[in-house]
Image (cartoon, rainbow over all chains, first blue to last red; front, side, top):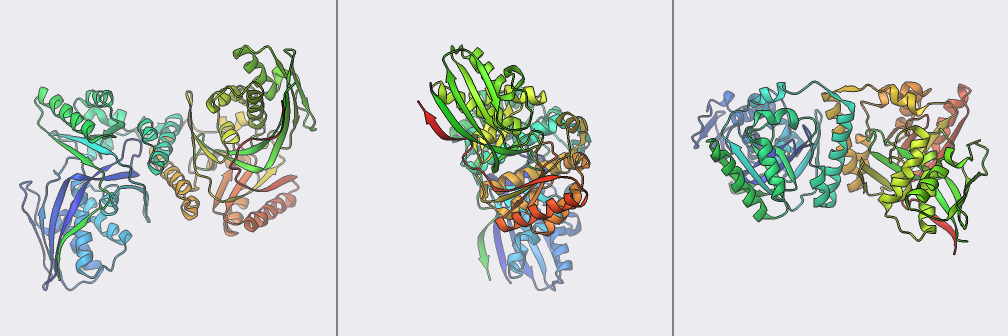
Length: 309
Length: 309
């Protein structure tokens, strides 16, 4: 039967001032997934990684997406999916989105590429719902589209693909747990209008900077006066890492998704590499294990590595 | 002595979801100003219009700008300014900004073009401060730069000039008074985070649409869930005019500045003309006098019509 092997990028949601609307795909880390169309209606999920994720289809992020596609599209076939996960679950780097988007993307190819990108996102969001309780496309959209995406609305799905500036990313994942639900509950339900105006001035500057490829404008727009001051207290040494990164030449950065990963954008790859080393050493000094990544922006989204018909 | 005659465009501040950050210059209406460098240190202001604005320099928007320039730049010369005002004061179409920006722009040329655009804006803001009590650049920036501008910050002045989409504007100025101070006081100091997120998603979409020249994206981003629902109650028949405009094909629109003028953006000039007629008839029916304007976006900002050295 038909099978496909895909490479699925990690993603950074929220992008500092772009809380709940902006996301970015990055080349490192990434998952690989092999998906095969089955003659039988079974949905089989296997993980080759050691993350202990549930393999029962209805409890697995990729599995639930395939089940929903099978049900809503009245498919007679089933799917077998083998997930080689490298994006650590709970890192804030879009691990669940990668599984969900990868499953929807691959299954769509196997059934004849009948879905639009919006419909693919629609199905992938069932995976995010299972993972976090919220149907959101902040990570799924950039994972599928590549580059930087604006989720103007997730119901109806309205995604705008932005320009991809030639920037590099340093990211660190300290091995501490920040639950998405905690990160969401800690936010204030009401904010001051004057802070909101500052925020949307920064968002406007960030979008203009991205579209104009104006790195200096991107840098001076990467300020979040609403979410970061609250959420950063959940991340050890956030302020130290941010301050040092800016001193070392980062354009700006902040919390990836709802954390605990922290990312910084740089103009040069060497700067990103230096910052990643600094990030690691900050956590080493307080005996917190961490993973660091240096990457550029992924402009392609999910790509097909192998396909057998 | 040197003299200059300039044409100064009206401006639409706030641009629906872009409250306090976006502004747009339009070709109709506009003011004309003649400014002459004097041997003596006098600041002389004359209005040829019938708007009864104060001509005493320290109480006149243009006069105060010239006084501040004279003082801060240690000028020995004075200025005579003759203002042919067509942008009605209190219309919400940037009448005070035109006087202030025009005075600063013209005086700068007469003293040898020594100021940057940011410095010109710095001086023009003294005029806005006199007019409304607030040093803001929402109207001054597009008046000087032309097109659509983002005021990312007014202290320090950080203006980003955006792309100028080929759109038309229908605007109506109903002859009712909306004081800027009332329009500001009516706003809530605190807003819900979820509304702020909707707003900044729309702002992000609007900036992306402007930069990509994507008229459909501009249209579906022109929604203001925070300011318009509150301020529009100060403007008679606002909802009727907006609903009919959208039915007639407007991309979107809202309150110009703090009102009472209402503007709509359209793809075609004919649509703008039809909407302007509809706007007028709505106010005619309830016996409110109104002025209507059909224009395109002004891409040049203030221009020099005559110059004598």
